[in-house]
Image (tube, rainbow, N blue to C red):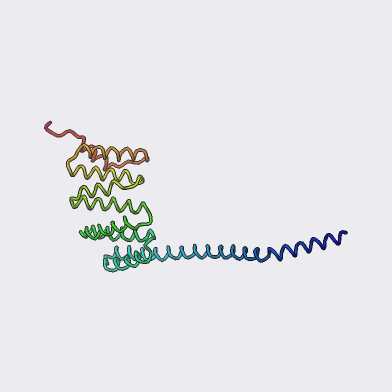
Length: 212
């Protein structure tokens, strides 16, 4: 009876394997393919990051060497091939800083506008908005500067409020400038930080006018 039971068990196993074996093997192959595919995807992303980083280093080296043509050319390749990489935004920041140093505000403005429109990282877009707002302020486009500042995220709220205060101060709106500076001071305090330059600007607004 025991032999018959073992034989039945063996037949049952064979039958089960015949019915399910192909599905099991296919499942194992699919799982293995998925693992290999994921590894290849990660390896590809690493290569992409390394390539973009190398181009960014070329951009910064060219900027430091004063070779604007080389910096611009390499940055164009970086932006074209790795638009979603953070290095694209960083390269444009480096070029824009050089543009500003050399008085090419329109060129810097275009670079910041690109970052705002296409940067994959929200923080890079916010940095570009703040820097663009400074250019707009310098060019007398006060309302456009305020518009750029107003959409800056909470992570850069202190910087945004300080810059907003700068715009109001230039406009001669002392009350709004003071409110904006005070908001920036309060935000920095909550974050455990401070800005002596900001404090000085606020004190200048609240200082009594001589002769009164």
